[in-house]
Length: 228
Image (tube, rainbow, N blue to C red; front, top):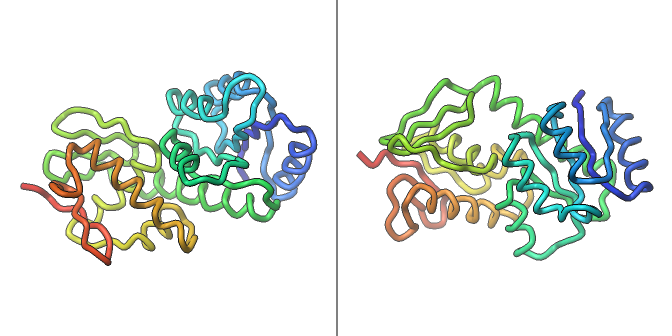
C-alpha cells in the first residue's frame, strides 16, 4: 500500500483512477492544481505522484521541476504528448516514468508497482557509500560528489550512476539497465538509456569521445571505470 498523490484536473479521469488505485489497496490524495500538489509534496510526503501535464494553474513540466527542487518523491507523468523531444524533456525535468493517454488502470498500476519497487529497494538495500576515483556516491542519502563538489542529479540519473558504480569494470547492457533500474522491459525504448548516459557524462565533465568514468562498449553496453 502506498499514499499516492494524484494531480489531475479532469474529474472523470480522477474518479476512474482513484477507484482503480483504491481497489488495489493504495491511499489516494486527489488534487486538481499544481500549487496544491506542491504543498502536499512538501508537507505530507506522499510515496508517489501521478502528475498530469495539462493543469489549469501551472504547466505540468514546470510543476515537475518545482517538485524536484523540494522532494525526491517518485513521479509518474501522465501525458498525451508522444514525441521523442517531449519525452526527453520530461525525463530531463525529473520524471521517473511516464504513461501516454489513454491508458488502462492495469497499465498505470503496473508502472506504479515497478517505480515503488525500485524506490524502496534503493533505500533498504543500498550500501552506505561507493567510491570510484574522485566520485563518491551515498545511495542511502541519495547524494553524489565529484572531487568534493556535489552533483545535481535527477532521481533517474542517480539510479543509473549508482547501479553502474556498484559494478565497476562490468559491461552493463542497455537492456539490463532498463530491466533493473527502470524495472521495465520496454523493447525499443533503450534510447532512454543513451539519453541518461549522455546527461551523466555532461555532469561528470566528460564526453563519449573522451570518457573518464563511463565507457561505451560498442554493440554491448556501458561500463563504469575507475580513472585512477
